[in-house]
Amino acid sequence: MSDARENTPNKSNAPEGQSREGNARRRSRGGRNRNRGKKEVEAKDGADTQSKPVKASENGPKEEGNGGNRNNRGRNRNNRNKRSEGKDVKATPVSEEIQSEYDLQNDLYDIDFSSSSTAAVYEETVLEKPVIGITCGDLNGIGMEVIITMLEDTRLTELCTPVVFASSKLASYHRNAIDKRNFQFRLCDTIGDIKEGANNLVLSWDDNVEITLGLPTDVSGAYALKSIDAAIDAAKNGKIHALLTAPINKHNIAASVEGFSGHTGYLAKEFSNDVLMILASDVLKVATVTGHVPISKVAEGITEASINKAIVLLAQSLKRDFGVVKPRIAVLGLNPHAGEMGTIGSEEKDIIRPAIENAEHKNTIVKGPFPADGFFGQGFESKFDAVLGMYHDQVLVPFKSLAMGSGTNYTAGLEIVRTSPDHGTAMHLAGKGKADATSMRNALYTAIDVYHARKGYDEMTKDPLKKQREKS
Image 1 (cartoon, rainbow, N blue to C red):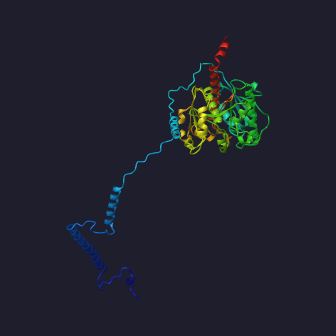
Image 2 (tube, rainbow, N blue to C red):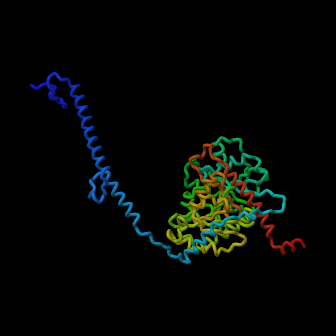
Image 3 (tube, rainbow, N blue to C red):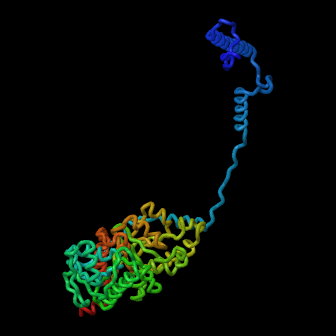
């Protein structure tokens, strides 16, 4: 049997008695000697080279190695230096149509309005308290809760006479649910029984309606519509000056009312008015050409006539309802980047811009179409009194990002002032006492302010000949 040492990888052939350490030292010395020999040879070669310079051409092709690569790189550099100079390349002249587009773009962003005056000044008058009709909204949502929370502030009755259209049983149910049993309505059988300085509730039905907080049902929608109809009837008879609507669930009303799409369209039909939905706050006002329609049908609703009508209604409302003497309106495009000069869509060029140019408005600055993303991204909305978008989310998303909870939904063009909070029924909060009444309160303030602004505007713009006849 062989010795174990013979199976090791570094087997040694040294004579017997010689240690491994000795072998290692000899191998180390041998390695050093070999290196020294190489250095001596290199030194001799170097000396021969120095004594007899040799041109590269005489030496023939270079061997592979670093030296050869360096020479090749040198040749490449020389070749590059010998290349011919680049030719002059001139751009094709821009067509008159493209140049016109760029000129329009330059003019579009000329939005320095610092010299224009926008605030109306009315003669000081004694303001009368308007009667504000308030609908209860979906019975199972937060409508009655935010109404009760809002009206707890007794100072509001110094500004207006609130009138809620609902039932005493509904009011009691919500008072108990949010533990506000000390709050009381003044119950009225008819609108003629209301009293100034009190929180009035006009009994609009006597039925024992099943209430299931947090769940929109056919019953909760049907009786929400009863509240709306009662308020409309009071408005048509001149019993209320403005209408404040609590949030509803469109679906459970549409199930029984064909074509119902929300308060705005329903009120427009009832009063036979052309209307426009405006979302208003202290920082931003927005409106839409198309309202609550599926996104797949938006393009169908974008016509020169619909845009023209929206511009006119928006300009009139800014003057009459919000006291803006010379409104500044920005109009957004429909497509990304406002169509990119027709590359992404032609609606801006073929429909929106002609509508802006042909809109029948006086004392109003209208600019557009702007790309929606860049417009809000660069803060251009602060330079205008209102922004007109083509569809709902295009302007409602930035509005609610900037003013959610403090904004007001306003219906322009309606013969009666109508406002609403900027939120929905919030079924998940119903009956928990957590609903925020800020937007409802702001909607009430807006209804009061618009009522007074309209009176002032109508008085200021009244026919002077008629006023002279009235005086005589």
